[in-house]
Length: 355
Image 1 (cartoon, rainbow, N blue to C red):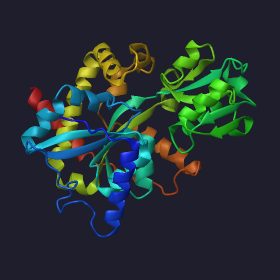
Image 2: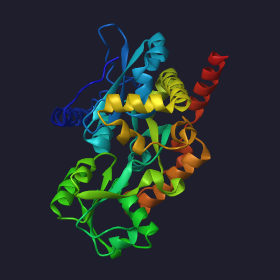
Image 3: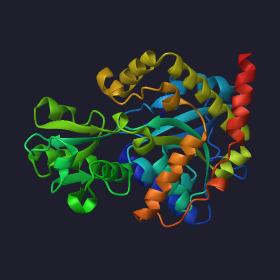
């Protein structure tokens, strides 16, 4: 199995050309819904699964383990398919372009992004929740005088609007008994926020785990709040696997095979979380300490492949947040978006094979 390594610049050109071609009457999708009918030299048809990346090739969670341990090969190869896990440094927007153009068959990313895609008219199905937790943290400058959440009042905070960091910081403020009107929120990318934090241009910044460690080591910042250590019902977010509706309807066996591979990987994670943390550190380039800093204490809750009510309820709360804050304008019909039939079949077949 291979991982395509696409730079942001090249990816933008490829996706732009793909969208232009689709506007000329060629969607790039074959009549059976498969993405561009791409085949490998060994004859396998390629299944393209996109995931957001901070510059590394590790997809995180069950999908990454399924690739690393060969479970995707085990379930897909007998069907004549092989999976490419494609990292997108452009995160959700780039993934959504690739779904629209037919360059991706599946997306493996935050529920926040999956809801945005569906609300904005991208025809996907929610296939399963893949993990549940929070990687977000609030770093504060040591010169800011901030030692408690209440000290955030009147301070300048960097965050990324229109994405999970926006939801995270508003929940942090709510926990402190504050609102957005009590602080000065500055919309910027995470790298820009870190740079501003290091120079004192902002007092605090929303970051993901590990990103502020160098500033902490230099004595320039401290971590004031960690989502993973806060109330799960408030701060945890499901990651999801979604698929292009046309593709999965024409290739149901492929979808079932991918989910079975992740079920196998999930069992490995739950049975030996320490081995999973070590593998994640090795493959992602993060330290073991960084990986474990966002580890969910209840691994069954954090890494089950499931569409349980708790996860779906969390997704609906995220949708309401996006509606309330003008991030999306169209409500998602969860009854039609969720298709549990593939998960149910995968669970049944996986359990039968284990007997």
